[in-house]
Image (cartoon, rainbow, N blue to C red; front, top):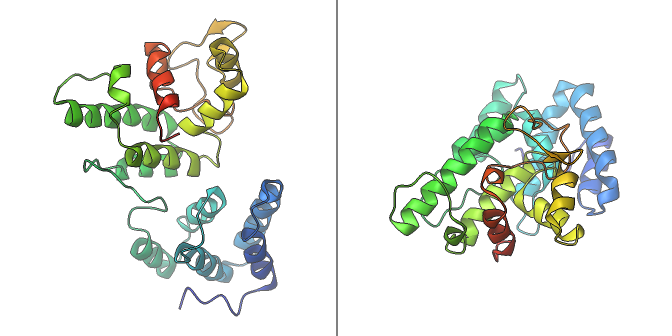
Amino acid sequence: MFKNVENLDDDCKELLDLLNKSDLNLSEQKINLINKIYHKDKGLHHQLLSILLYRYYDSNTVLGTIDSFVFELLGNSDSPIINDEISKHFPQGIVNLRSEYGIDYLPLQKLLVTKSFQEADTLTHLLLCQLSQIIGNHTRQWLYFTDINRFPCADLHTIDQLWQIHSGGLFGLSVQKRIWLSSGSDWEIFWSKIGWKVDNVNCRYPQGFVWNINAPEGHLPLFNQLRGVQVLAALFEHPAF
């Protein structure tokens, strides 16, 4: 029922066509069209869901931040049918929560969907510590840089995708690595670009940081910034990124 995209509204047809194009310059146009459809007619919420499910079950499609935007909008729908379908098809959200050690990333997904970024940042640290404890058979509540190279790619990909997908591509470890490389691997330039240092002064935790989507690109997660550069450098060198 919901995966049928043959009888779409004209705007929904245009959206499906745009979603099949990977041009990043079209992102704003896609977002604007999604908002137009969502707010134009509640009856079109079902068509948005059909598009999302069509893409979700298409093995050739890799879901991205735009799909997440549709998912989050539909999660606010007051239609019991849509809510039931979302729960049935996306019981763990839109990201595949893979873990090689059975770590439960669903609580992190829920925090990021609701844009509870400070809580998500704290939980990210706790989950990576939990992963380190399992792999290294220890009980400490912090990370050493030597822990990082033992982390599975699957778990780091899950964390990174959750941060990226639910921030519209603004946050995530891979985003930070890209900015670091573009800074010539110069940490001082990097700190300033991502807003961890302002006017050459280190930001104070937590009040000095921005816990919303008005933050600079790559600003979050920052769970590791209090322990210097070694942990972050090890993450940037991990094959997951």
